[in-house]
Length: 313
Image (cartoon, rainbow, N blue to C red):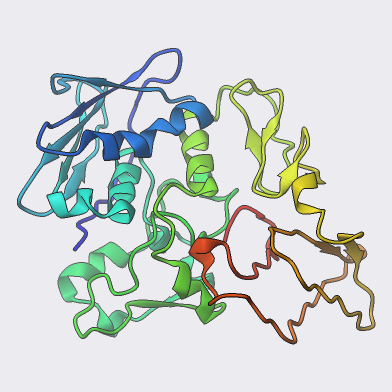
C-alpha cells in the first residue's frame, strides 16, 4: 500500500545553475530513481546530481525501509527531504514515480479542490485510517489552476487504494474509460512536469504566459514547450507529423450534422474541430474498429481532448 503525506510549503530546492543534491542508499536501485528525475534536468530549472553521502541540509535522501514507505518534506534550507521506500516500491514504476513526485512537492490528484467535478469518492468503501488521504488539500492551488485534472498523472491513486471491501474508492464522473488508464502511465505526465515548473521556475520568465493549448515557457523564456501534437512559438499549430493522415485535418462545426470517416490508419493522427465563437462542438463516435484490442499504453485507441487544457488526459 501507499503511505502519503500532506504538506504546507514547497521544498526550497535550489534552481539552476545550482544543483539539487541526491543521496540514494546503496540498498536501493539508484538507476531507477535517477531515471525518474533525469528528464526534469531538461524540462525544468531543476538539476539533480548524485552524491555518496546523505544530505544534512537541503537536498533529497532516499533510504530503504521495511516499514511503510513515506516522505518527510523539507521546509527549510537547513533540512533535507527524506524519502523512505520499501523495495516493493522500487520495482513498481508507478509507485516509485508517485513518491518522487511527493518529494518534489506534487500532491495526489484526488485531493485537488476541484476533484468533485471529475471523480466521485466512495467514502463507504474506504478504511477509516485511509480517509485522511482523500481529504481535499487547498495548498498548491496556484500551481494547479492552469492544469486540468489529469488521469494520466503519476500522482493519481490506484482506485482501490485504502479499500476495505475490495470495491473502488473512487470512480470517474466523466466516462468509465478514464479508469482504464489509471495504472498505465508510469512516468511524469506533461502536466506533472508543468506543475513542477510553476512551483520552482515560475518567477524566472518575467512576462505573461502566452502559450496556447496548455503550453508553458521553456527555460530560456523565448518559446513554449507544447503538449503532444502542437508546435509553434506559442503552440498555435498542429504538428505536421500528425496531419499526414488525410488531406484535411482542420474542421469547422456547424448547426447540422457532418460526418468524418477515418480508415486504414496506421499512425498517430490529429484532427482539430472548432465552432464559431460562442458555440459548442458535439462529437458522436458512431463506430470504431481497431486492429488490436483497445490498449492506450500501446498507443491504440481514440482520445478526444475537449477541455481547455489540451495536455490533460
